[in-house]
Amino acid sequence: MNTQPLLDQLIEALQTQPGIGPKSAQRIAFQLLERDRDRGLKLARVLSEALTKIGQCGSCRTFTESELCRTCASPTRDSSILCVVESPLDVASIEQAADYHGKYFVLMGHLSPIDGITPESLGLHLLEQRLLTGEVKELIVATGTTMEGEATAHYLKDLAESAAVIATRIAYGVPMGGELEYVDGSTLSHAIAARRVY
Image 1 (cartoon, rainbow, N blue to C red):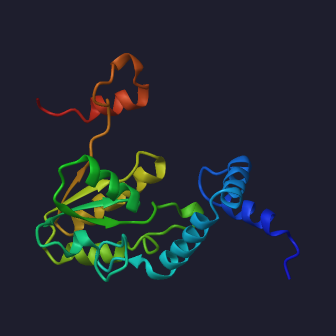
Image 2: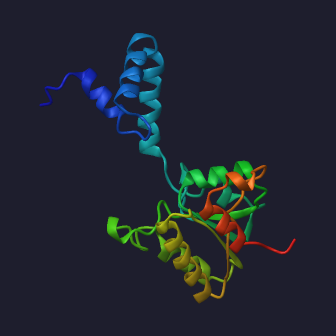
């Protein structure tokens, strides 16, 4: 039996979320208890329902309540273009910012042998099967520029090449409206190396 007071348990539970430290967790807990009990109960109800009903899309692996997510089920999306991202947040970012009409494959992470994250745990065998069907003509690699993201990108490139699919990498470099004097050296170096004909 847990003898820890409920308030301490609540604060500790809130701290498990990214970006919420002890002070923020304490403020949230006190706010819920002092002024927002109804909203807190609604949050608990919705959170419980979401955790039990939301699963992964059978095609792209993003979060959905259905067998297929809206993007994969849409007849207007181009199935010949497949963008591989690390997380569902990346899908949301691309959908909000870019004019992209292809489909996605969500890795739910990146290769990291030290942390035990292997190609199998990222569902890359499913991606390979999808590439071998011949439906995908271009694989857009949209992983991060961390060491693990780059390692994952190289793995994806090799996977695409072995299936005779064109692999492209999203561009990284100088942001729109950015001044060169304020761009860090590695970003500028990457921007120069990935230059294109204008």
